Image (cartoon, rainbow, N blue to C red; front, side, top):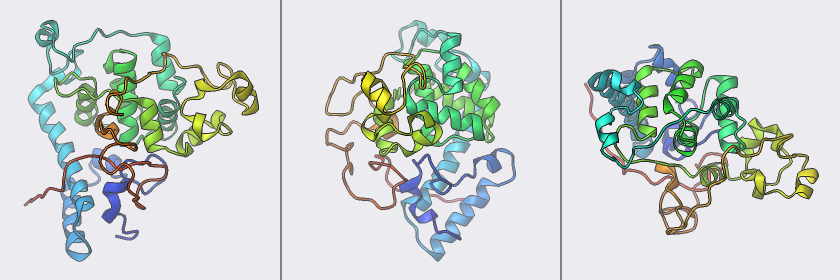
Length: 307
């Protein structure tokens, strides 16, 4: 109500830096200090007093998504804590496309938890989590994809770390989302192209420089892929790989271009062949979050009713 941010929430919600790109309701919801029904009522009141649009709907939609994982956990029970998730061992053994051979390398896990993977977007998000107990929705999807799908680390170690660190932890949202992010619910597997996501949602590198000060003098064209710096550039920009900032713990991904989308990028990466990321990739939207290059492709505005 005070800053009138609700009217532009859909455009800003994929931000990572600053206070106003998202609601920041999650800790209060997780601890029972704020009722999702009250949030929905206030959104309806705002729609009557000011504007009803995709943004006002989307806040309520995300409350419903939160409730979905409550019911999902109630239905699936302890399966959300198992390595093969709700997909189940039989489906994995029978060759389900999401099946994979999980591992656990202590050095890889430590690099991920401490923000030393050599991938700036992952490192920035993990350092933010350690310092604040918070991480954006965009960040959570990327670090989950990186740990589970890029390094093939047992995804439960990631979920357990989030359980320890998050101020807004609740078991159903945390474990349900990690199980889904690892592909162990059997649905679509969203493997994120970390570099593309970094360039799309932190275009100028402001976020990664904030949490990875070693990169503060690295130019924007290299800040998301510092491993591309020559020895001369490392000296010039005061960032020596393997000394000031880590080398990548896994080989950087080189997408096989199929219409410009790479390996997907989940809900945020898109598969659009046009420069800038599919539908609306180049349109000028002044409400985007800081550094966000493109708009999200997602569902149309829906409707909701509650009692």
